[in-house]
Amino acid sequence: MVVGGGGEGSLGVYISISRAGLDIGVFGSGGAGAGANVGLSGYGAYIPGGRENISGTTINTNVSTAIASGTYMEDVNTGDFAGIAFGPAARLGGSETYSKTGAYGLRDAFESLFEWWGNRNAPKGSCP
Image 1 (cartoon, rainbow, N blue to C red):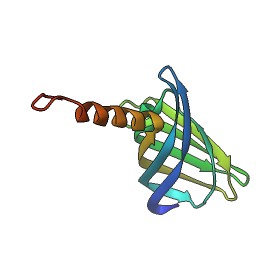
Image 2: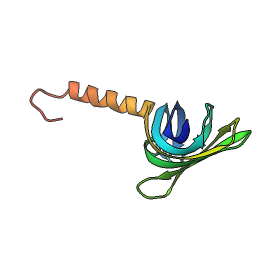
Image 3: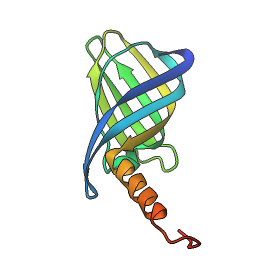
């Protein structure tokens, strides 16, 4: 919800198919914004690359019509295209938000497990 000045947040599940392989996980996003855009809905998004491209900071341009909404995401550091999202809507509106997103997937969980297992089985007095 962004009215005048406000904030936005989202939680969801992602499925990523990239050069690194298949990954499934969860993400959360939150940020501050300005405009007139109030709503609660689901959406689908396209973000090129893997999980590492989901996590990060973006500038989002959000537009809602009477039936659909769309968001254009831009990388805050480079100004490059970061993703696009679409979903249902029930009101007219628009906003600009500065959002931080984090993601954690099965690939992250396996990497953490392998790191823990490797450190657990390292000989005493050795450096990891």
